[in-house]
Length: 100
Image (cartoon, rainbow, N blue to C red; front, side, top):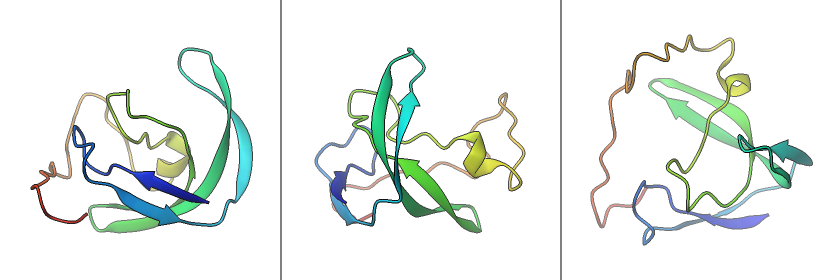
């Protein structure tokens, strides 16, 4: 699978082209109840000092607030989530002209 991602919020100019094997295809229901068949790929995610593989389903999120959602399956057994807190690992600021 070859696809492009915009890795920075509110920046549609910077694009990274990725090429990875497809692991699966799955039906996914979004929060609005719409079903969509999506490709599944494996990718490494880094949160703080922890780096681990996760399954990602691919869809176009350009019109949505967040470019990626990390679900409870990816987080379980690794982190405790406190929904009352934000940016516990710090926030990242993107500087124009710097590669991801």
